Each structure stands twice: as C-alpha cells, then as structure tokens.
Image (cartoon, rainbow, N blue to C red; front, side, top):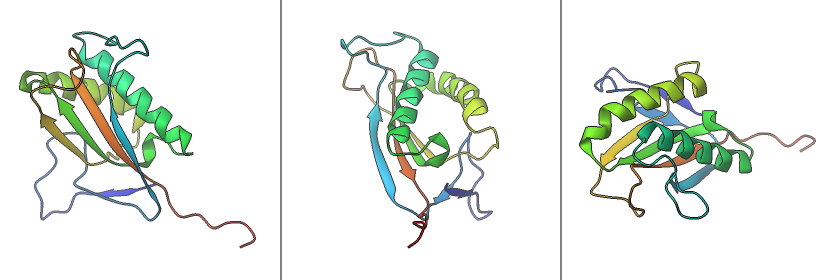
Length: 140
C-alpha cells in the first residue's frame, strides 16, 4: 500500500488528494478509462457522476486483475472536457472517495481540462498508477 504525504513546503491540496505518494514495490500503469459500454455507447450521457462511478469501477477491476485494489493507487490523472465540470467532478469524487478511502488518505491527482476525449459524449477519463509493496515469498 502506498504512503502519502503533504509536506509543509508545498501548498495544501486543492481537493481530495495528496501531494506525494511513495511505493516500495512494482508499479502498474492503468490506461485511461472511459464510461463506454461494449457496444460503444456512452454510459451516463451528460451525467458526470454516473460516468465517474463507471470509470472507477473499471479502474477497480483493473487493480483486482493484478491482485490490488483502489487503496493501492499511487496516482490518478483525470481529464475533464469542460472547466464548468470541475465543481461537479469534485462533488462526485467526494462521494466516491467517502466509500473508497474511508481513512482519508487520498492518492495524488492531476486534473486536466481538455478540448475533448476520444469518444463524443464522454465527459471524464481517468488513468491510474498502482503500486504494490514487495512481499517476501514464504520459504525464500
């Protein structure tokens, strides 16, 4: 599990994230996830909160596939398609993080506002870096 810190030499975070993360084990890089169904349709059209829930569900599934969870995220990078979505993003993320990070330890996050994403109608994309501690192999 990563450790997080907010050194006094940096400004406090603007939201639910930490300034620094440290990981003692291997890193896994999860590609940006979108709220798009298998048939290519947008999940939750026009609903940033619904899209963000789906994106985090997918990141959790990716983490689980390598034996990790969302508590093992070292860093998020978030892309929004409109600056006006930032307050909605903060509100939706706060609800998600109340469930995911109940201990109040939040991974670093870089938030970018972009002109658009690969699929029209997608409002948010999130990529993640996961970190696992190195664990001793029994009997080694």
